[in-house]
Amino acid sequence: MAKRRVGILTGGGDAPGLNGIIEASSRALIQAGYEVIGIMDGYEGIFNNRYRDLTADVVHGVHIDAGTLLGTSNKTWIAGRADEFNANYKKLNVEGLIVAGGDGTFAGLSELGDKIVPAIGVPKTIDNDLAGTEVTFGYDTACSVIAEAADALRTTANAHRRIMIIEAMGRTAGWLALGGGLAGYADVILIPERPFSKEALLKSIKEKQKTSRGLVMVVAEGAFAKGESPHVAFKVKGSPQEERYGGVAEMLARWIEAETGWESRHVVLGHLQRSKAPTTTDRFLTLTMGVEVAKMVQDHAWGQAVVYRDGRVQRAQLTELMQPARLVDKDHRWVQLAQALGIFI
Ligand code: F6P
Image (cartoon, rainbow, N blue to C red; front, side):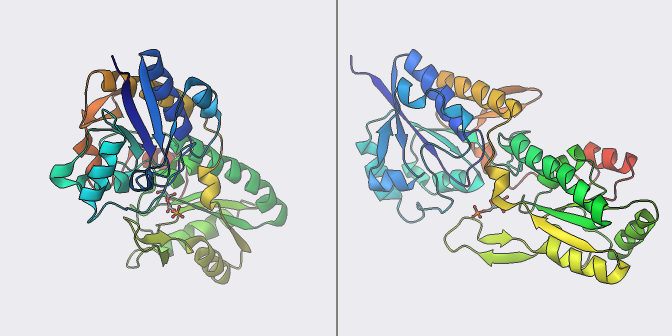
């Protein structure tokens, strides 16, 4: 009997843990007698017929690294090319695809309409804002980068009697700034879900100025003041979400310094948040998800996704990942934690 064969691809912005998904799902599938191929550079690899064999020796140990062994792309290439996609997919001679990606990647699949291919979804983003799952891998690692930056920058803030403002990623969601800011005990955390009052922020900073040598603020790239809008730095044509946010930390540093006389500097963490080796939490999550995905392949659970809910990895419909972004509830229990600590949020 011919060997059963499955493809795996990674799409969207990279997130620490993608290699863990590749290693865990491939190893569990190989154990179960499958042949696994890795499609290169997300959907691009389907159009270009570029893939590599994922044998045990190829995937062994890759879980350690951030990035993705298979390459990725956060531009959608499917719109208007469903027939071409479908014809090329058939040439791969696989039972279906394991697709690890974000909202743009899954929206891409929905563009196939009635030409949909058998797929199992694996939710991924450092932003932690995918619908249908309570946490995405990469988030914990990215939060640790923010918390470590807050810890480190507090030393220079105190040395120079300055405010250090850290800009975190996250697009329209504040999960990264909130999680990383809390873990680093930042003095101020600004997130898009809670547009801030400029007056109240200045009042709080002036108050803290009386007792603190330095201050650390963590600001989401999408954060904005009441009555204003998020700072769009530039647009990426062809990307499912064209806006790239940025610039709010620098703007705040100049404005706060002018208003309070407290010298301020800003640091944009940018893609460092996506580039660190996965934490143990992210490793365990991807290991568990990868093994579940391999079981799903054996159960022919096409059209479904692996998610994390109620404290464990489980299955859901793939369409549940295609819903609008999951934002921080403005009175979320983590917001209350910050308030209890006297953090301005
Ligand atoms: O969605 C993940 C993310 O890292 C966002 O937090 C950030 O705004 C965006 O991607 C950056 O995209 P790019 O890789 O195109 O710079």
